[in-house]
Structures are given as C-alpha cells and as structure tokens.
Image (cartoon, rainbow, N blue to C red; front, top):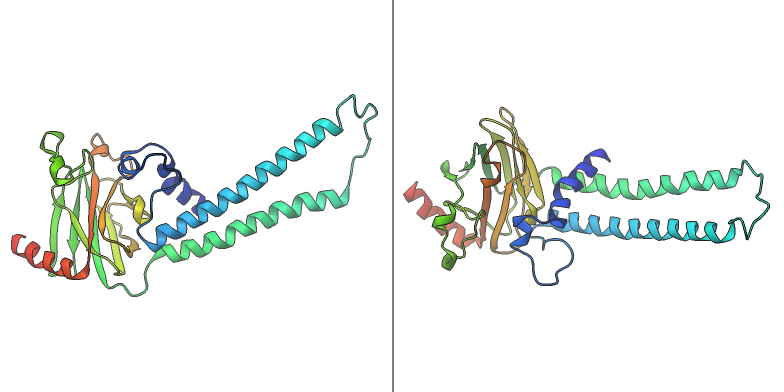
Length: 261
C-alpha cells in the first residue's frame, strides 16, 4: 500500500498540477489526466478513476452522517442526550467497513504493481543513463547504437519544426510502436529519475544500480518527459523527447542513425 501510494503521488499528481509536460498536451476546457499512450498508463488512469469514485462516495457518506447528527442531535432537537457508552454492533460495522474499503484498494493496486514491474520477454532493450544534466541512450540490441540527448536552448528553438521550449532535445529517442520494450535505467553521477507521464513510467536512475521498467507504445507520436529527481542546478533542463513510429520507420531510422553514429 505504501508503494502504490508513493507511485500515485509521484506519477498521477504531476498530471493534476501545472507542469510543462502536461501543459503541452492540454486542450481547452480539458478535464482529467493526460491521454495515455501505453497499457501501463491506461491501467494507472483506470485505478485513479476507481479511487476517485470511492473517495467521492466516502466524502458524501460522511457528510451525510454529519448533517444528520447536526440536525438530529442538536440541543434544541435532543435536550436530553443519551448516556450510551458502548454499542457492539456499531463498533463492528465501523471497523469492518474501512477494512473492506482498504482491501478493495489493495488487491487492484498489488495487481497493477506486478503488471508495471517488468516485461517477461522483451522484444528490444533501451538503456538510459542520467548525467548532470542530460540523458544518454543506448540500443544494446542494435550494434550498441548510442547518443546523448540535451535540451535545445531557447534561442535555437524552431517552432516551424514543432519544437517546444524546455522540452525538445537535439537528439530524439526513436522507439517502435506495438513492441514490448525493456528500459534499463542508471546514472553516472547523482540520482536522477526517468519520467514520461504518457507512458506511465517514473523510475529512479541511481549511480551503480540498474533499475528496470518497460513500455509498449500503442500509437505514433511525440511524447515528453523530464527528470523528476532534484539533481542539481540544471535539474529543470533535462527533458526527455521520445518519437514513437511504426516498426518499418524505426528500422529505416536505425540504418540512418548507425551511419551517423
């Protein structure tokens, strides 16, 4: 339960408050979370929506009880208060109901955690290394293709190419859609965090350790993320830009990338 609570606070809450990643995908009068691009993100949003329904019911139920108590047991309506001190059935009910509510939350959360953990048989691997203050990417399955990716400075942003301030990078990560991709994450200096909200991933990059997550992107597009662990003076300038393309286009990109690597 503690782990899923931390997961929700670190992944879902950034959706709800203003940050540049969410702002770039928002629409006029939009309500709700960012549109998901992976099965993991879809399940996270489903779990969030379930919790919202549950919390709304609890709030309304407790509010109704309080209003009833204010009206039924105020001094004017009930001048002689009851001296009852114990009510066994009531104590059983108010203990049992919260327990059942917690179980209703726990089982789906554990199932979701196991689903998010790792992919059994990945079709490809991407290794991501955090540096102060940029990202390094490596494709171990494709002749060790590797490159660094840095944020494009404000004065070099070309809006005609769809580049976005504080989000676009000089080298874009290209990944195929409809592919189970294992992502290995580490760091070279201090702790960073790889976070791409539309993918439903937020994984710490720890020096000397290799952590793992996975994605299966369901639709083409350009997706953005940021480092989500305070890592120094330029922490805010470590964007992640991922371009998801069909498999055929990915193979063509690989050929060109290997030539230029």
